[in-house]
Amino acid sequence: MTFLLEKSTKAFAEAKEYIPGGVNSPVRSFRSVGGTPPFIASAHGSKLKDIDNNEYIDYVLSWGPCILGHSHEKVTAALQQAVMQGTSYGAPTILETKVSKLIREIMPAIERVRMVNSGTEATMSALRLARAYTKRTKIVKFAGCYHGHHDSLLVTAGSGAATFGVPDSPGVPDSIATTTLTVPYNDAAALERLFAKQGEEIAAVIIEPVAGNMGLVLPKKGYLAQVRKITAQYGALLIFDEVMSGFRCAFHGAQDLYNIQPDLTCLGKVIGGGLPVGAYGGKAEIMELISPAGPVYQAGTLSGNPLAMTAGYVTLTLLKEQAEAYYAFLTKQTEKLTRGMKAAAEAFDLHYQYHHVGSMFSMFFNGADVVDYETAKQSDVEAFRVYFHAMLSQGIYLAPSQFECAFMSLAHNDADIEQTIAASKNAFREVYEFNKMR
Ligand SMILES: *Cc1c(COP(=O)(O)O)cnc(C)c1O
Image (cartoon, rainbow, N blue to C red; front, side):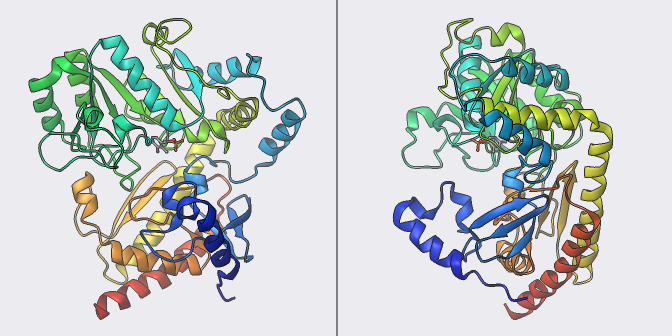
């Protein structure tokens, strides 16, 4: 089978005439790996099909949400029924309470939850709430953690010691960026030093408890407990951004896996079962400040949308029914795949790090341990580019960047995994040849 992207190439050129960069979210454009992104026609189970009729085993899964696999029959059946009842009312429904109840059962730290339409909205609203609750202004984030694209959090800042935020994008006012302080991930001493200096001004620390947006980076043993301790000591709120890790690293999220109680949690991705959604929640005492229960304003025309709630409810219900078996399966399949790929890489003597937890995994072309953004950035992005295209042309769809996490679904079977390992052997050979040439 030859791999051609003829129709996608045309579609991409035309899209650029109407949409900035041809895409509605930047990383889809393949900018960091070059080439043409396949335009997708359909998706079922573990597979994507593009408009040139190429088929791929999908490890992006819409960047995480599709944990049951694409177009799961129970989700699509429920959506078909829901759509016949009207697609939005802008008025309360029983389903919203059912979803919220389910979320609280799964994550008991979430006593009250507010639905929004994206992860970005969730973290943005959580920050406003934290500032209102603590009557403080400053926010701490960690370099390499992504929490959406709103002004306060579009800040990575430099390495080393805590710095004032430097915006990652033009258009973010310095006056906002400077209220965001950045420290390295996995470095409790750096956080401690920052709090010793400015602790009284800090409203909240927001963290990906399992970091998935610099590639997958796991928290060191005891690190999250130290973050919890420091925030509590200074009266700052701890916000877990589990938009990606929730229902992914473990059914009950990183907060259960590492046994830490955050004050607020942000969710998204899986809770929408593939429809646009986000949510933030936490202690009732804090959440009751949200309008109309309290004075902190936050609203949304389509928030709690019946279609998104339907897909989310069915997805979470299915996961809950057999949580133990499903998460054991996801972990087992992820381990099988990472073991196989690691063996394939070792055969070519490549510098390679593999991280995985639950249904999340990442591979870094890196000889050293990856523990934070600085070490992640040392990865060989040129090797990744060669690897990525070699995989794509063999029908394996990975995220088009070294700094993204990959995902397993319940629809990925042993044949998918074997095919991926076999493709990896060829791809690593190409990287090996590429390394010899440069
Ligand atoms: C994806 C993601 C977001 C942003 O969610 P959107 O729905 O894309 O706005 C926020 N935080 C984390 C950890 C994410 O992975």
